[in-house]
Each structure stands twice: as C-alpha cells, then as structure tokens.
Image (tube, rainbow, N blue to C red; front, side):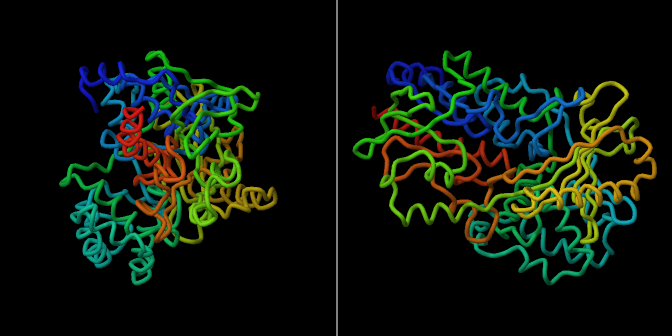
Length: 458
C-alpha cells in the first residue's frame, strides 16, 4: 500500500494521540493492520476477552467450535488475503482449501467450480443447464460498474422465471455465498459474486479456512502484527461513548470512566448500532439515523455442531437443496482440517437461515435441531450410531451484510460522515462488496486512504 520511504515519512508526521479502533473483529483488525503498517500508533478496544468478533471460536469437549461457519471466499483473491499480502505476513496464515463441495437431492451431485462445469452438472436436466448458462455467462463477463446498476433489482426477478431444478441451483449458490435465500438477495450483489469467481477475469471459485482450526485465527494473526508494530490491542475493554466537541472527535470514554484522547476514532461494528449507542443526542440528525437504521438487515441462523465417532463422508461441504430440507448446509469441518477435533472424532456443523425472532425461541430451535437430525439420518444411515453429542447455537447476528435490493454496495453506510470530523466506520455494514468477513476486510481497504488523508492533515 505504501513504500518503505512513504511509511517512514508518515510515521514522522503521526500524531502523538493514538488512532482508536472500536472492535477487534475482522473489520477492526484489518484497518488496524493497514494503519500500523503505515507507522501510525493504534489502540484497538474490544469488549470481549478475545479477538475475532463474530468469528470468535470456542473449545468444547476438545473440539474447536466456530461462531457460525465462516470461510475465506475466493481464496487468495479475497480482500483479507490481499491485506495480509500487502503487509507481508500472509505466510503466517496456513490455509486449507475448501473445494470438495456437493449438492444433495436424493443423491449427491458435484458442485460446479466454474461456469464450464454447469454443462456437466447432474443436479439439473441438460435443458436447464443451457438456460442457466444463458443467465450466468453475461453476469460473469460484465463489469463491476454494470453490476452496480442491478443493485435495486431483486434476484428473484431472474429466479422466479426458472424451472424447479434451476431454482435449486440458485438456492445452493446463495447459501454458500450469502448464507441466505434468493428472495433476500440483490441481483447486483449476486452478479458481483459471479464476476469474482470467473477465472477469465482473474477470479477464482475456491474457498479457504484456517488450517490451524478456528476462523478467528485470521484475527489473531492480524492482532499479533499490530502489537509487533508497537500498537495496542486491548481486550476486555468496553467503550461507553465516543466524545465529540464542535463536530470533531476528541476521544472515547471507556466503561470504567477513563478518557482516551484521540483525533481519529474508527468504529468497526454495525453502524446502525453504534450511532444509537455510542453518541450523545444531537450528534446526528433524525434523517441520518433513520437512513442508517434501514441497514439493519442481518443474517440470522440456527446452527448445530455434531461430534461423530467416524467419518460419514469424504466431502467437505454438502448443500441439501429443495424446500423440504431444513438443513441448508452441512459442513464437515474435520474434513477441511483435522485440527478442529481430537484424534478419532469428527466434527460437522449444520446450519439454516431463520427469522431473527426464531433465534430467541427455544421451542423453535428444538424443532429445527430434531428435523436436522432426521435429515442427517436419511442422508447418512450411520449418523445415529456415530453421534457422540450435539450442541445447538442460534445467532441473531451472524452477518451484518445487507443484501437486499437498494441497500447494497454503495448504498450502505459510508465510511465517513459530514457530521463529525475524524469519525470513520468500517465493517460489513459499510460501503463494500463481498461475502461476510471478506466484506468487512474490503471495507477497511476502501476506508484506508480516507483515514490516511485525515491523519496527514493533523
């Protein structure tokens, strides 16, 4: 991002007050990594006792359980990987490629790794494959600029005209790419995903997961780099308020009452929560708050980790397709990397998107888990005998990426606002494209030059 000489020059001009970053998830640590690499003094504050944010993992009965299932999209073409490569620490993150993917519809069908594979896809009849190609090829070879023109168009405008089998394909792709269903997706957002997966335009359809186990390993790598650059990552520190005087940021107040002075504060958790929680009344006008609150369109899921005494499948990911399946994604984590499980045991996570209110309904969660078990037994006859334990989890906010028509890409929360000088927003709820955590990293890449410009003016 900058040459060594530029970095030294910026370092000389850096203000004595640190840049304060709220949140140590992928978004916050991505921008912290870029700014620390520039030579700026950075202080990251995270209310949890560990880094990772919504990707934080935990250990349970010697298995590493992820908070949701996260994968690095587009492998080494991802925004996260580009950041690590720019600061020359990509070798610290060992990645396992996720490419053994299949559909399931009364039998297994290979997931297409590229546009050409669609002609060989056994899930749908040949005539439907031709129809799909007619839709996907123009998307794959269009430009990002033209995809923007589709941001207000719902994906269902395309899928509603398709036959049942073709709709199944879109169901599975949307589940892999967005952890959601086509009726919640903008056509522009879907088109950008197809473009980024097109190898003829420098893209890739490969995905990756940390070989060491736990998606938060990515955040750990970035946090360690930030600390090596004589900056701070403060865990267990909650921010009570962002301090603003005369339309300029002056610092933050911690929950302990301590004041940290700063001319630059970066918020990395959803902007629609931050503006309602961290500021005095009157900082933002009502129209701005109303517009930002419209972006509160999150992905909610119920997921269940199952520990098994034997390997049921050689595949890494299986997508049951069709409305009759509650299970929308079966992820064999131990097939991706054995690091997540003790020897002789295997770990899978099964997920399905739900309405936000369902994540707080124990009866509904129990129904979903029961149906998942039945479906797994039907697909894998040895499932019941090999099951050691299961652990259901419900996430009201697993992604803050807005995917609905009219609320994606450049229509999301901007990185800076005219209301307050020195205040910036990054993360998956802000201007960016991509999938989940990669959207958060892409946001940091886009916000980086804006923040650099502000810091150089101090």
